[in-house]
Length: 281
Image (cartoon, rainbow, N blue to C red; front, side):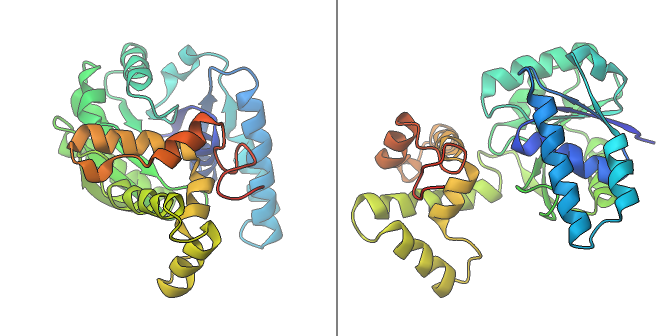
């Protein structure tokens, strides 16, 4: 029975994943190499849980119990006792491969190494370890505590047993698991990112303003959020990184990142996290 979950990366996705596991009754060890990141993550989680209590979705006692199950890890070695590991660091292939090689040496042989990657090959990450059959993708959606979907990605060597364990975990988290093949972008971003990229082309070519484009998609196509507001929410740097993975991995010019997207990222206009993107925050 899995009891201790290790989460590596305490950013937006990492703290959401840690919260989801802790709320589901797991003990969570949260680690980040950046000083102060875990402390900031805990503050974010405390605020998130407080909102749940405010809205009547969580009892005050459950909020306290959830926080009690969250434990900061001061170094990666503190995750050696974990029964299941989830990586949620920067969307960079080399950084993830390096981390997976370290986790492979650190974790017990039976422990599954899961990646929250939104586009990078699970097969490549598995090849960086001596346990490719126990490496898989577990792509949560943002914001993790609210979004019910988890995209499960099976690498070339991932075992049926490992996928079954991950699927059962999703049930315990109250999430719906959907399996995707190990192709660039999987299902979600293979479809979503080209739409966002095309919306950015429409801005660059003067087809419409960001507000006009988003309004068409919300009121005309019944999307809950327009593609440009969504890009700002995700982070334009993340959108660019995923488009580059799609373009490099599939070799089709239709996945070429829009030049305006490249310029905005180069200028540091990354969306909500920087205060400026297609909108100001």
